[in-house]
Length: 507
Image 1 (cartoon, rainbow, N blue to C red):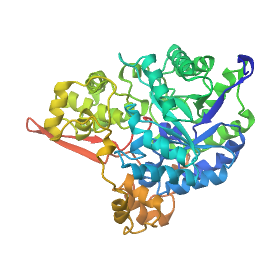
Image 2 (image 1 turned 180 degrees about the vertical axis):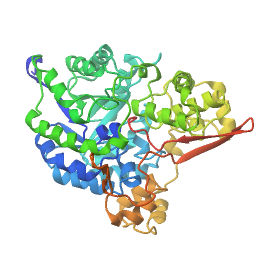
Image 3 (image 1 turned 45 degrees about the vertical axis):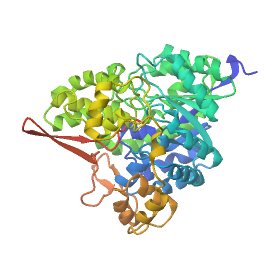
Image 4 (image 1 turned 45 degrees about the horizontal axis):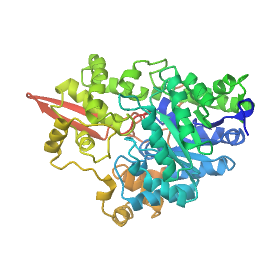
């Protein structure tokens, strides 16, 4: 039996996905990623996360890059190591729920194109919203990792999370991941939760821990999780770490020295990976997060670091830059009214935007459509009790009833309709992959299909000259812009509130 003195801790490397999503708004192009693939594949990682999250959106919205071709490229260049993606359950990689057939087809095609490990989560921890994905991934012969979106509230106890882990195990997942998107899992909490799940689910079920570094405490949390029996942790190469990103891979390996724990990762190889990203990262200065140190106030707001800076920018644009602390104070109020939802895409954007509206226009004087849907159950069941008066207000605003069923059960079959809409589009190649791209981003996909033949844009610039190697076409936007702008008139004054399409570090 494996003992403390010889236990190996596996590592999932995040450099190709969540690291640059968190630090440079997912703008790193394929040309700057492929140079590290050979060393990454030989380094001894348990898996390499390289797809999903916001990468799909960013590829077609900003980089003129086919996300499916990116995945196939990674599979070709890294044949030895399992490739991992982040999947939002019934939301896939878009921002609404999809009918089951669409979810099943997406999972099947992702596996066919190279995904080996699917990390599947739901923003509300409503496990009904991941059942179809888990079933489809297992049918495709891939690894289905059920995910607990970690959060802190009066109702979120170790016992509640352990119960969720048991339900995931009963669902048939191959492993479980505790996903701490805002860096709020403190060391003792990490130990207690890992030990609780380990005791309840047994030694045979793999247990992973994903944390960000934003608050400055989570490297210790990783160590406590190791002591409690975690099998695998997520880290990012040091030249792509910290801030709203993750803990450095090399630091984690060195931390284990002398503890009786070790890894299979080859330090010499990953130091070459470090050098590669140290060089290319400089080219993305204009997209780099302004959050570079520790942000301990996130323990209160639980807003991920990247969203914090995005929210500050939105307030400045509305001439209310001095109201950020008011918004941060309002977020816990709004979150309590929702039933203490975890703050991760899309719930983090929904709660954050409503908090901004409350501060600027008065509490719940204006509701977004998304917030009303959240209150009425159209994103799924929330963990706690909702503010019933606010539910009534949402019903009046949305002019529809509250639901308690799985939201996707209300959806009619939509695959053939999506296919009929996508196929006539200029540049659509007729594949299921293109139909899925259209399904998830119907406003962006037509423009992408039409320009795909021009090849990927590289938004990185030479750090000396400031010139981009590949200039995007005129009108291409190199900054995060929102697809939805709310124009609201209150007391004769018009306000505009823009919701960003995705938050660079929320997922």
